[in-house]
Length: 209
Figure (cartoon, helix red, strand yellow):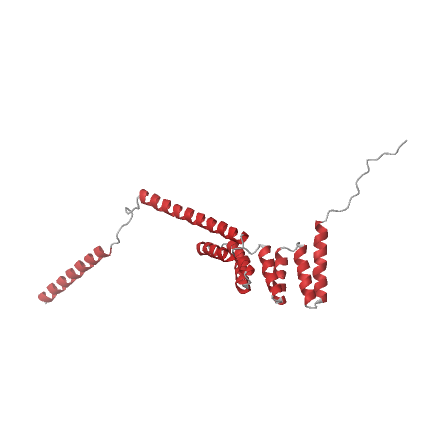
């Protein structure tokens, strides 16, 4: 019995010792004193700033060179320049728009359509992207697609008479008389809103005595 009691005490002592050791090992390492030097942070910010400036300058350079190539009717070069811009910034509506124009001038209508779709996605309120896309569809006699694009545009600019005029013309091509009349009426009403009311000028002539 005495030996059993001693054995139990030894086991209890070992368990306490193991528990104490495990508690010591489980203590989390404090990281409060670990700090990034201010000089390193400043260096990182400077490097990032230089990278952003370089990126911005590169985008502007390729946009200008692309525009110059378009004006010179060097459409292949223009395409390469605008693709460079898109590599830097895929959200550049301007690059996609002018890329579409370059493809259009080379009669590559599928790529032009794709470029204008991306321009619209990047800048949904830019009406000229809609009209250029719709005009390509009209050229390809894809009248349903052209009408769909013009209808989208009229929702963005409901006071634009030219959009409704083009929409009316497309409806006329499809023989949709009622829709055409409605579109032309909207065009006339919007144009009337922009017209200043007629006010006869007062005559400066006085009656001779």
